[in-house]
Image (cartoon, rainbow, N blue to C red):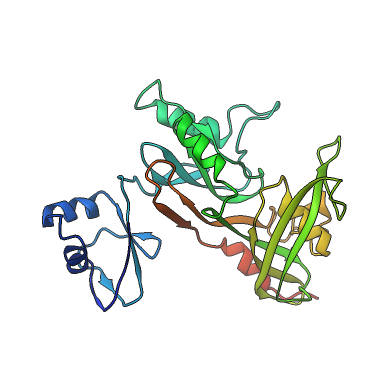
Length: 290
C-alpha cells in the first residue's frame, strides 16, 4: 500500500488517519515489525516527523532488516523473498572452481537453520566483482513470477559505475547486440543478427578530469552488459581489465547495483531498495590526477 503525505505531521497520526480500519495496536505492530517505509527506508518510531510530499509504503509482511554477515547484509526478508547487499568479490552462484563461498550457498545455509527443508532459488546474478542489491526467492512460485517480470515495466534496476575519463555528454543511451565468444567474453555489434539486443542509459553524477561517476539504468539484463557498453563508449569501468580498463584506483571493479524496484511476487506491492554509493567511488574523484 502506497500513501502520500499531504501536510506536515508525525507518522503515528498520519497512519491513524489513513488506516481507519486498523486499531492503534494494529498500527504499533506494523511499526514494530518494520512494515512501514518512509521514502524507501524502514521507520519504526511512532513520532517520526513527516513532510508534505513524502511517500509511505505499508508492507504486507514482516521484514527482518539489516542482518549482517561477513560478505553480505540481508536488507529484507519475508516468506517469499530475500534481498541482500552483496560485497564485491563474492560469487552469486557456484562455479566449477568454487562451490561454497557464494551468496547462494551462504543464504541456503542460513534459511536451513530454521527448517532443514527450506530452500533458496536464484532470480538473477551479479558479476563476482560487482557489489550491491540482489534478490533471491524462497520458493519456486516466487522465483518464476520474479523472473517473468524481471525485465518488465514493473522492475527498475539502477547501478553506479566509476569509469575512466570524463564523459563527452552528461547523459546518453547505448544500444547494441551482444554475443559471447568461446572464452566467455562478451562482444558488442550493431548487427541485429549478431547477438541479443541490449539497452543501457547513463547520466553523469560527478566527474573529475580523470574519472566519471555514472548512474546507469538497464532495460535489458544481458551478461556483462554495462561493462561491455562502457568499453564501447571508450570509458571502461575502472578495474575492468577484461573490458579495456587501464587503471584500478579502488582495487576492485567500479560497479555497484545501487537501486532496485520490483513488484512483490505474491502480494503485488511495489518494493524499493537503495544502498549507499561506495565511499571509495567518490574518493577517487577527489584525488589529484596528473
